Length: 82
Image (cartoon, rainbow, N blue to C red; front, side, top):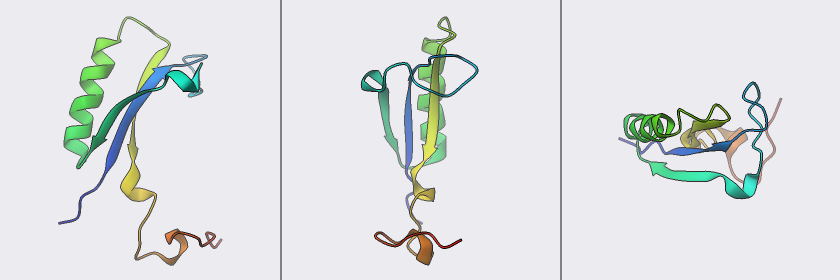
């Protein structure tokens, strides 16, 4: 079974109604995880730890979706076909 990498990251947003970080230099990289279950556990823990700050949000990025070598459009160095 393939490893489906997930990245958990977050930080303070300019406005809680938008997903734009206030300072990208201060983004908190929680870590990379080999499956969604472990990424969700880390996301939930970090999100709950910052629940008192309405401007702070954490996200799970599905890195495995960014590159699928079986799909020609996602092979490195090739432009995506539309």
